[in-house]
Image: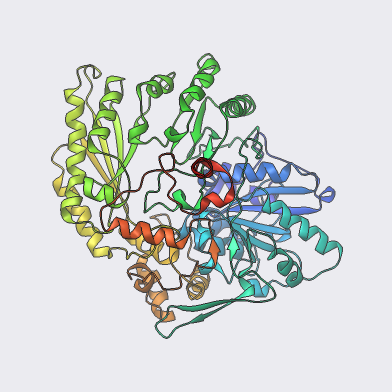
Length: 618
């Protein structure tokens, strides 16, 4: 419900459907009949935010409570931001059109480090003080969760409390404390102290940080009875965990415009660069019956004709074939397409192929991550070249002609020979197509090779590793380009400048708060978008603050250094991560969790595949 003032702007901006609300399945409540108003803010455009599964789950969960009204807020694109700023129109929620400053909770999901500038910019556009210390009353409580909350320190001055881990239960617990505190007339600081006692809640203002002379952290000191270590929350039983039976259906085309069904959380694999593979442990699956019923309801209530089975590695779902059989019983007649967006090379079988090519046949995507076998062993990818080529041959025989291959450059111990092996592997896939006797007649193959730059992330075995310099990454990108000799291969690569800043904030500490505050004052926003990102301007901010960004991105850290996130516990022990890092330098792999329990620490939750393994070993 947009205001008259906003209506006047819509003809002046791209995609006005981003800003009007009124979509199918949006939730409207009488604001006078609810106790708590929650603005769920996604620090990116409508198209990106509306594709995000976590937002769909929590939006529906919060609105399932009569006393909570959760509304959606997205970052206005550059044109709309300018129009709103010129006319003093504050950022507003789509459902009611009310300013974000009117809400009790202002919640952000942190999916990408380069969205941090948008978090602060959205607060600024809302006329909400960006620093926690400047917000005084028991209102405008700014909270944040998501994968980037695993290192909350670069945002410590701005966020009142962080949700560590999965939010379905802890969000509601914090809201209950808020209702009680408001009823009893307690202060903001009393509310935050009470929240700090809830497992999975981190209140940064209740911790002091002391630094060594060399800039590393000397100590974290909790105060006011805050816990020394904050432990993540997880949903133990995915079958009974809340899942929406409908989604808000967007008015404009979004990035992933389809129904999304979560089939399990976590990952059994342990790729040493992959943050998600460690912070979401242990693996917890839904049963095929539960997934099947949830898919049916989603399609019925949204009208979507495609369901994406979401997980970190869909082919690792232990009952994938029985699940696909259940889904195809009705999806084929309903002309609903089933997609598996995260297949492993060693998980694509004839059975799976025959189940997912029911209605539409899009390209297949695999992630070998490294071109050479040595480097795949270093990163614990556990994929052989012959497995990849065999999988591609299966796909080509099944009618596919398009394959996307994802790689990383800048991985620890990488050489230029490893880099050239990326092009060589792409060529092998092309050759495999032309050697397949049952390939599609009269069609040529298209192989896309994409190379992103390695970013060392917290809670991974490579969290101590330096990132390659920007110049080194550019050299490696050119080396791949020059090693490709066929037009059948298209080469894409990620900008090394943005990867550098991503590494800075991924491994940063509280000193970076001053950088982000300055960035907000100067109007920085949408740094994940090429149209807005300017590394030179960021480097000027670092120079102004006397901070060397390479200290965070390009420095190898010792195993005994206190890391900015060491007071956060995501279930995997530091000892295990050190052991995995040491194995990487010996080119030694670790078997996945269904083959052997490697004692990473996640068995303590008493759920998931690793717990079952430990139980059976006793």
